[in-house]
Length: 294
View 1 (spheres, rainbow, N blue to C red):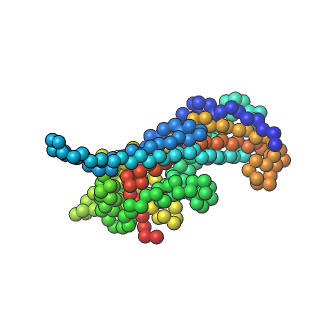
View 2: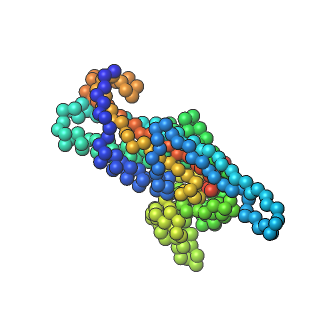
View 3: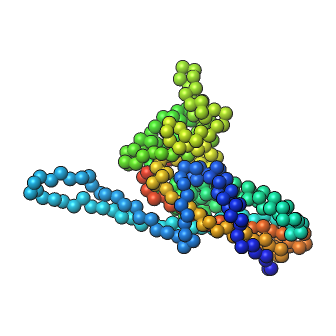
């Protein structure tokens, strides 16, 4: 197969891509990304095992102890490709930029959704099946603190989930809510008055009661887990990032998507982009899930 490989996405498109990803991924909205080296990185979760000790003058001192646990973050490949007319190869530079900009917009949406589905639920976004590459590196597998969802009292569900995180001595600074949960919040009334009108008409408030908030279908994206909310310390307990280099490939020959259709035979070329993303749930007990009974 012969290919014509461009070096990288234009840096302007990369910046625009990541801006769009942050706008469409709950995890990216609640936690700023940290660039992850291609070979991965190792984070150390440090904790002191006991409280401070008061010792009398001349008294005996005892060890408090520390725990230092390594957590590896290994980037994995996210790929998307699409066929376009081979007129792309003969178009003006301005027309090619228009096509790549449109591809960039679509790619951003797919990456954003893919990050959430993989990191929240361990799914391959395309097949919606469990990904062997992701394994157990996702919230549904690692976060065991759980509140059973009740659609009539979603605010009480939030209180209970936050209490679980507080009980683990972590602070909740982010709420990832499903569309169903947001709609349920909008319906809560007291004396006939809506208590949370910021959720009305499908709205997604960026903050709620002083905490960062995002309402997104990806939260309930796994049929098996039936999640409706993930709450916790997204600033300290979760880390994600991407490699800034995004290879862009224009393929002119062959059948790169294994569809059985030769590109030349259909007067097409294939645009493929690959992005490397890595993440880790550093402290599972810093989070709680609100989910339906399995």
